[in-house]
Image (cartoon, rainbow, N blue to C red; front, side):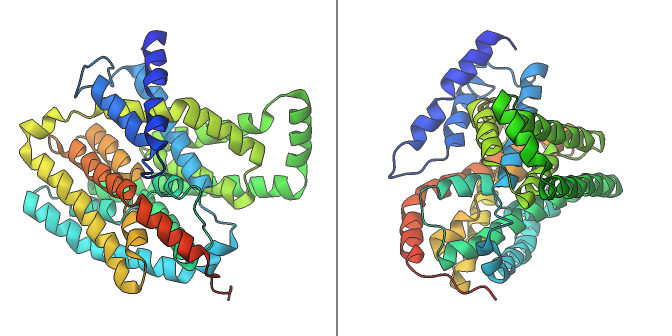
Length: 386
């Protein structure tokens, strides 16, 4: 990879925000970036090589940052999360229960033997996709309040479950790696809380802001990349590392200055690199060579919409229920990890990502009805905290 290619990625990645500008359809920014990657990667002109070591490493940095930001967006300190916790958790569990037989059925029909993996994919949600879709909408109504813990639990549970589902032959190794990453992230949370309570962070913040040192950002990135290194060493997806560190920071309370700095670093550079790389690595020509992969991808995407949409029977507004099916991090990790381990059939990685794109497309299509529900719902006071 060279500077010309990097400049090209940064230039064409502007397409993502441009596609998200129309208010009538809130297309996630990642859609444009993925389309650019498809056009310039293995599916299209093949100008960008996803197998380039530098490109792939920068994409990994972007993935870790994207999942870190997703973790920090989980409102663990928000009273609204606790207010709707019981309903949201119950719905997340119900989705997981429905996903198990659906995943088994898909694996049986296509003969892949990946029932557990498909169940995790179907049950997963992605706060990094759903929360931007809610930007500018009221988040105080009962339906949205109950959706937040549902997203948080689905995100966390599926991220932890993925290593076991994708490589059951090495379940003990996956368990040790996941426990190590979670344990270190818990230590990070305890240390950050101690530093916050003693006022040490505030002192560092004042010196850093006065002298323009960006010390808090440097420390945050050091912690994130150290835990990501642990995850790689333990053969666990860096998705788990980024998300857990993000939760640790959210639990203490991310300083606004750091949040803005990380947002600029992530959305301004590394996230576009990651999503362009992801699009470039997808070879939709595999779908032509393996027609079953196309059908599998559609089956995964549509089944996820049905499983999550079934929560409408619990009086969850159907646009909200279907929107919770939006997924990205788990399918991406499943595709990349599965390909690296050699446990996927030809075209199966592309099929899983196609399924994710189906859920994202549905989220974009439902942006209007979702906004209407959020606005009407926002006029109703949420139930009192028990």
